[in-house]
Length: 569
Image (cartoon, rainbow, N blue to C red; front, side, top):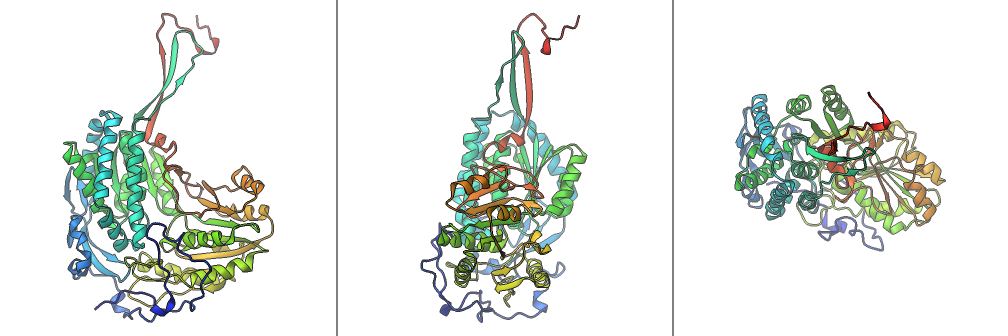
């Protein structure tokens, strides 16, 4: 019998309100539980049992036999699933892969991935369907997206549980992520009546100038494992109301989420007698992603992933004069000034650094503390970290679930070695937890901002603490890394706030004050600068990236005056 990992009952687990997540989770005053050990309730596992499942000898689908996982069938999932939704039908002639539960590395199900032949058939149908979809009035397209939102609402908790099971994030975060795509549907419905152009005064008599926005045709969306639903929503909801078809390649390690989401979306198009190929989806690896990047039928490719891979995607898309929307790596800092509300900042850092096991692109990775409050802040933060309950992400009260894959755990351990070799001092954590799953300890490190490892994104719950003397120095440290996604400052001083958000402040795409680096709302444009890629998704005027702008000049007179006063004969 498998024992799901949990902290010992003597360790005073921290219980969460389901909505407020980690922000409201830390009680005041801070409690002082025992230090963070390797939990004795984590079961040992042999090195042999940690090997990946064989494709030639399919393992038992243990998850489908469990009563608590019956929701998988409610989502239309089975022990073996076709992973290609092309031409409005499910199929797949690619390799058979397994998807695993990161809490125990047990196989959940098998998926037959899409082949290149599947891709070509599906992409051809999607391209043809674009002619139908773009001719439908935008408010009518918005009505379809509204129905998609309602269909997702009906499966909110099932989808949230699937996210928790397959990706590994705690259940409140899994449900919250599905809620985010529902919110994006609502946002897109309103947007469908506001895809407005501009009327521009003409210098020529009896002439009118205006901007007209038209669909691009097909938008390619390549998403990552850490937000397999939300990032799809940022792109697909907007792309659809803008009149585009969508071809989606989900992350290779979260294929069940890709399949379950696609089934729900496809059912709405089918119910409305619309071509199902408007929304086409593939489970697969790099081969499918590269095909999307190289395909001239896809004028816009949205890619979420590492800076290294994103740079390659950008080069491939740009070589064919396509457009790229990149959401890449982050290396986000929180600055805590000497006048900051310390308890507020401590709770914010906890959520920003530990939430999603440090696997958000907006995770706080660098903590910059004013020298006058440095030790006081760290002492409180360490005590709060000791309260973090580690275990099964689907269990109530868990704050830290597993890393997504065994490779992620290995990267964490390698990162800790690099930190030590570069003079980093481990204040708390720094180890993997011996278990059947991919669990690691939340880690706080004291290190110099000049250490090379600080410039890299270590995708896990590792927080670098460093001190500064002046705001100018803190801003320089914040801006010193290649990435430029999210940043935050904790202060009550108006001059510090406005310097921070101004031209001599943070160089990131998200610049916050007195809130964490993560947990962005959908109403604003999401994205970053520098090696984060420069893309903007979700709210504000991000919709303009999904459309083609035409400047139209109309002469309704009988003369032909030329601009700039030119007289040509």
